[in-house]
Length: 279
Length: 110
Image (cartoon, rainbow over all chains, first blue to last red; front, top):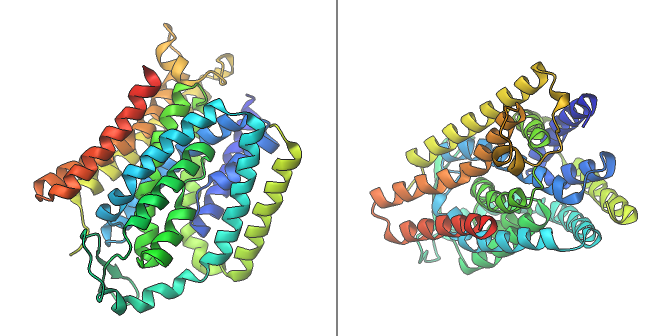
C-alpha cells in the first residue's frame, strides 16, 4: 500500500469520524463503502478495519458518558450476552459467505440505517416523559439516574420490557459481527422507544455494548487474517481524532435537513455498492 | 442510584490511552524508518507470530491487538466492580459475558 494512499485514507477517516460521531452512529457505514468502493479493498478487510476503529471510538465515548451516569453498566451488560453470541455468529458467517452476498447485505444495512436515522429524530421527545417511568416496576434493577446537564439535575428512570434488550442485543451483535456497523443504530431506538430508557442513557450505554460486540467480532476477523495492522492503526487514530471533533460542532450544524441529506448519502452508497457487485 | 463506576472508568481510560498510544508510536516508527520495504498487506496475525526478524509493523500489530483486547479488560473491571459491591446477578452476567468473549477467542484460534 503506497504511503500517499495511506495519507489519503487518514484524512478521509478523520472526516468519517467527524460525521459519524455527529450523528451518533458507527463509522462503518461510511468507512466500509470508502475502503471497498474507493480503495478497492476486500469487504472483509474493510469490515475488520471498521470494527477495530469502532473499539477505540467506543472506549473514548464510554469514558465521557460514564462520568455523569449516561453509561449504565448494568443496562449494557443486560444486552451483552446475546449481543456477544450474535457477534460470534455474524463474524463467523462473514468469513464463510460469498463476498457478493456480504456486499448486498451491507447495502441493505445502509438503507435500514438511513431509515432509522430519519425515524430517530422522534426519539428526542422521550426523556420529557420521565415521570411516567416510576409507575413501572424495575424487576431486574436496570434503571438508575443520570445528571441532566442543562439544569445539573439528577434524573431517575426505570426500564420497561427488559426482554426486548436481549433480542435487540442479538440482532445488533449479529449485524456488528457480520457487517461491522456497530449496532447502536438498532440498540438505541429499541432502548428509547421500546424500553423507555432516556435517549442520553441509551446512547451512553450503547457505546459500551458496541465496544464489547465489535471486539468479539474483531477477534474472529483477526484470526481469519483480515486485519491489516498499518491500515487499521491509521484509520483507528484518524477516526479517534474525528470523534473528538464531531461532538464539538454537532450542536452548531446538526439539524433535520442535514440528517435527511446524510440518510440520502447512505442510500446512494448502498446503490453504488449493489451496482459494483463483488468488491 | 448513580452509575459512577471507578473500576470501569479506569479500565476505559487506561485501555484507550495505551492502545491508541502504541498504535501511534508504531505508525510513527514505520513512517520514520520508511518501511515501504515491509509488506503493509501482511495480516496482523502473521506479523505477530510468523516473523523471526524485527519488523516495525509488528509494533503496529501489537497496538491493534491491544485495541481488540481492551473490551476484555472493561468486562473484567465490571466484574470486580459488581463483586465488590455484592451485586450477585450482575456479577454473574458480567462473568458470562467475559466467558462468551473468551469463547470466541478459543473457538477461532483452536
